[in-house]
Image (cartoon, rainbow, N blue to C red; front, side):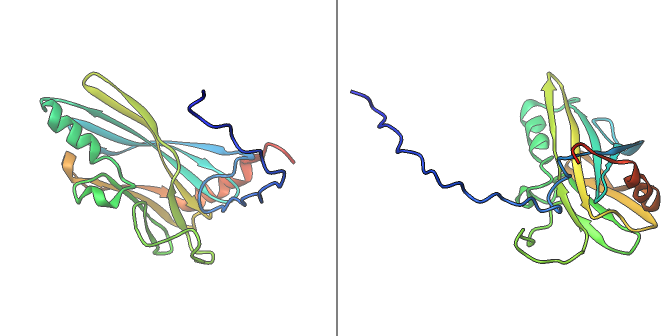
Length: 196
């Protein structure tokens, strides 16, 4: 006697393909132009947040952040609490959490963790900012996250593009790195399609 019943027969009807909204993440069929940046966004005794590079696609820019933390003199509970505060995409994590945002040359301010926008909402051609990756790991007293990413759609306007962060739990006040939005736009022409 089998505990699990057999699966029902599969339906032969194909479900409709979900169309990818370009606001949500970079296109999968492009090789981006890579723009090295290597600018420190914030550095303390226990944390370094660096704007590593930008991946420029024909329709947007993926800003890649390299974040490194070390335990220092904190006990295990304090260390774990600080790591939880690093979840920038969860507004409910408290005011001390790690946060990211952008200020564009045309005056728009975009927050990575702003609640209230849903994918079904039509915002026209207004810029949007979404988390675009993340991965990392811990090794004893250190924690490294490569690719805290921010997908900006569409391409930035001319003028300054400010990457902004704050992380009160780690003693990081509002800090910023300023990039050239026009220079990033220009590099979009260097991205290539994988398949025509």
